Length: 250
Image 1 (tube, rainbow, N blue to C red):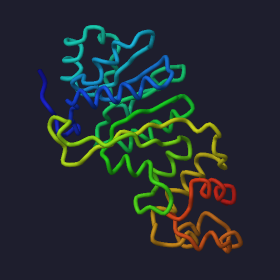
Image 2 (spheres, helix red, strand yellow):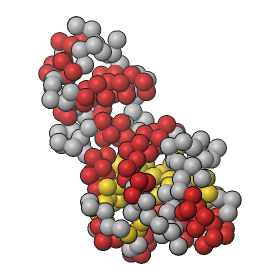
Image 3 (tube, rainbow, N blue to C red):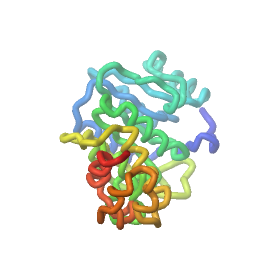
Image 4 (cartoon, one colour):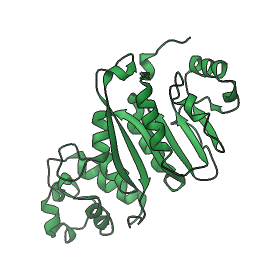
C-alpha cells in the first residue's frame, strides 16, 4: 500500500458516490486529451483509465504514489508525469481537459498555472478546499471576492458544482471541500494586456480597504484618478470593470 504525507497536503478521496459524481460531470463535456492532477491512491484514476478513445496522462510528484499506481494499474506505466504540476510543461500540444482532487496546499498556485495554459484548457473539474472553491466563484461585493476570483473569472466561467464532506476523505481534512468547473468564456474579455491586468487586480486587492484612488495611485495619471470609479474599493468592481480600467493605465 502507501502512506499519507501531510507535507504534500494529501487527503485521498474514498467516497465512491463523490467519485462517480465527478466522473459524470466530466462526461458532460467533450474532450480527447485529459490530464489528472494528483491521482494519489487512484480514486478517480480507476474510472478515468476506462474512458475509451482519449489520451490520458496523470501528474504525480510523490515517488511512493507513482510506484503504487503503476503496480495497481499497469496501463499507467507510460502515462504518469512524475513531477509537480507547478513545474511541468504543457502536457499536450492540442487542447486538453484537467481533472483532479487538487492538493490543498498548492491549489491556488495550480489555478495560476492553469491560467498560463488558458488558451489550451477546454475544461477544468477540480476539488478544492471549500473556502478556495467559493472564493474562485465569488462575485463583486462579497467579502471573499478577491484576486483569484477576478483573474480566474476573466478567462473562465466558474460553476460551483457541489460540497464534499470531510468524511469522504482519508484522512479527513479539517475543512469541507467543494468541486468547481471552469469553462473558457465564449466571449473573451477585452483587456489591455495580461501583465497590466494582473498588476492592476493584484495592486487593487493588496490594499483592499483603501479606495482604488489610494491603492492604485501609481498605475494611473492624476487626471484619470479623478474619475468616480476610483472612489470605490476593489471588492466593489466587477471583472468587467477591472478589464475596462486596464486600458487607462499608464
